[in-house]
Amino acid sequence: MSNIYLSILLIDIHAPRKYLNNNSYLEHCKHGPPNTLRELNSCHIHLPVDACQNYCNGSDYKNEAVHKLGAQSTGFAMESSLFRLIKPAPLTEPVSSRIGCIYMYRAMWLMGWLPPKDGLIRYLYNCWTFVTFGFGTVYLSAGFAMSYVLEFNNFTPDEFLTSLQVALNVFGTAVKATILYRNLWRLTKTEDIMDGLDKRARSDSDRHKMHIIVARSNLVFLIFTIVYCVYVGSTFLSYVFSGRPPWSVYNPFLDWHKSTRNLWIQAIFEYIIMSFAVMTDQLADTYLLVFLIIIRGHFDVLKDHVRNLRMDPDMSEQDNYEEIVNCIKDHKKIKECCNMLRPVISGTIFVQFGLIGSVLGLTLINVFFFSNLWRGLASFMFVVAVLMETFPFCYTCNWLLDDCDDLSNALFQSKWIDAELRYKSTLTHFMHQAQQPILFMAGGIIPITMNSNISVAKFAFSIITIVREMNLAEQFK
Image 1 (cartoon, rainbow, N blue to C red):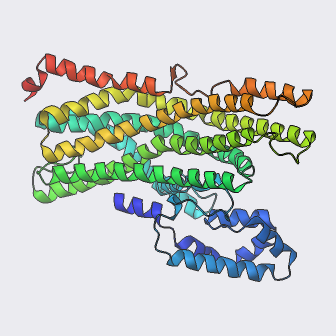
Image 2 (cartoon, helix red, strand yellow; image 1 turned 90 degrees about the vertical axis):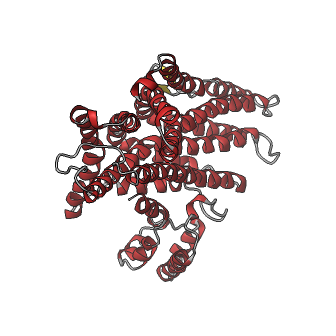
Image 3 (cartoon, rainbow, N blue to C red; image 1 turned 90 degrees about the horizontal axis):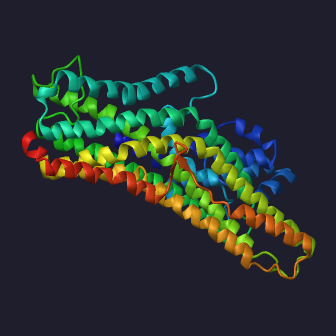
């Protein structure tokens, strides 16, 4: 299941070819370059804007566009780079922040979060949504609870801790996924705002920076996917080959104790539903990091524009004034992106802050006192996955706070002394706005920073200390 999931993220070679064979493409060409580019971008193929404009002015626009599209799609299908989207695009390609979300949206599509607009396929797709969400969150949460009520005496200490540490995370995943799913429209609105910021990447330096950021966003999502899939696979293998189901989820229709065949059926069933839960958890943990990386990329481009204010001797005072006004607009759009994501981030991180200490504590107790080598390695991968749920995002939030300080300093150090009064007053207003830090709050009460993350994670060591001081590990054995 995890291998299929990873393959769908990386490979999408049929989309360009299907699009090329679609007769409706010629209809899209009639609407001019903007619509054409939008349709090509949906297939992750990009033609330069000036090329599309030239095609529109020529009589052979359709044939040439189709010819170029065919050449690109053929080359795309034949190239062996499975990791194309984690490599920076060439400078000849236009900047598109949306490309940095491609892996994430493919995962959402696979999990049933992006239904078609209409038709019978929409209802079939909604059935798949019900399967993934129902089994990955609702059934799994109830299954863990029923196992503790009906089969508690059958648990060994390491099996119980392995089950409990995941159960707590599954409960949190159900809440986080619900918050994210109900606010998917905010992600779309954020992308619309970032489209305006993409147009401001004018120089080769700007485009190069944004291409790197876009590729980095996809790379981050891919790393999360690999780590989460490795955890599921390692836990499955370490337990099933020792004669136990990996997570001991209650199954009213099957008794795995009766035969090896039943054990494998139970183990594979748990592997599938746990894959649903892990993929859902990954989406709830990575969307914020993917978007914040892209936002920081636009912030970096903005800082370069501020450093270059009034540095071109060929620009008039009116041109310089218009440029600083454009920088103010860019800064406002960046803050709009953050404000659009703020309610979603607040809810999901607050849930994770409430769980990380107890989940880490139970996992480390399992590793230190009860697990053998292979189960310990699986638990170690779970620790890595839990740490990745909050630490990278909190670290990026700290960098965003530093970006705000850097922008304010860049404004003050820019060439403004001999500017006209109107420019200086605008610069003063811009500095005042730039000095306001972009700070996210978890649940509206906890600042999302590295200090907060470390503080809530310290609870894990308090749990370990209690277990060690009271000698609870020996009593459980």
